[in-house]
Image (cartoon, rainbow, N blue to C red; front, side, top):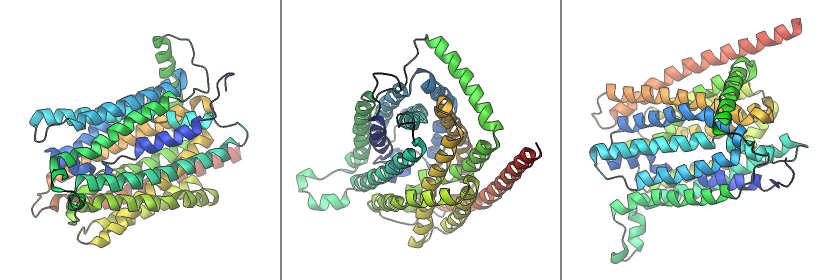
Length: 435
């Protein structure tokens, strides 16, 4: 760390930032929020492609710039963009035709740009702010605390968001003159996240850069960013360990994240009342408390690839359990598939931190984010096409059919990738022994 810069408070600020940035009250009603504004389900899924494409364009450049011009600067920008993206939804007109769709596209664009800007920079800033002695062990503690705080924030945000969106329970206790209208209720979760964006902006402005920002022009910084991007991307895709982790991980991530974005539509499909959506999200958050302990044990006992293989097996079973969508029992595989996100994130983060050095760490994480979001965008495109292929009569038929077709696709894809990764790593070990 540079003299005169006390960055020891960054890890704690990182925990608060990542909690407020990620625990968003509109998550339990994300899909139906867009649908109730006036979009169709396939339009909503296509918007996720806009989000992913934005990250594809900006992810690696932002990560490289974080390494060149400073991680704090990127986090401040990410917080500001969070405020802008929520403003687009806050003022979007209901059934507003092309104006509504344009504002939703703008929301997904600014959301993707914010995610791309924050991705890698937040973890790298916190990691490099830790004392060099026993840094890897200390990072396990910070990462575990961050996951737990995110779980607490998630629980609170889910309950509040679900109850605000469907205020029928609250209105029973409110006097006639204070009852929430449906139109106002649908805006309240968004308004709450808008305020969280302002708090994130304040937190990031108080962070400290642990390395001195170089006195370079923008063009020089961009050239270095491009050079660092190309160098790091080449390293990631030629290092067998990082390549295997990234490729297997992206296959799991794309399918799991797609389901995460349509959970509220799935809950409507099994005829749950909307006010319960937040409590279901909170239940997922509570279950998330167990994830760090489980992930730590698994990563101490097994290799990253073995852990990803175990996670993939669980995801296949969960996807199969979602298909009937005809009873409350279908919530169990839904809960389990959401927990796999935390297990996978812990496993991949730990493995990539161990493989990369400080100068390229933010860029490595951004390369990972780039390919993950590219895969997610491609899967969203395919899933939206599936939805338009099948008739939606009886109600929900298109979603049921799309859920069914994704099971064999994912099972075949992830099996091929795992066997390929094992062969590649074994071949590397044979070459090392022979050399």
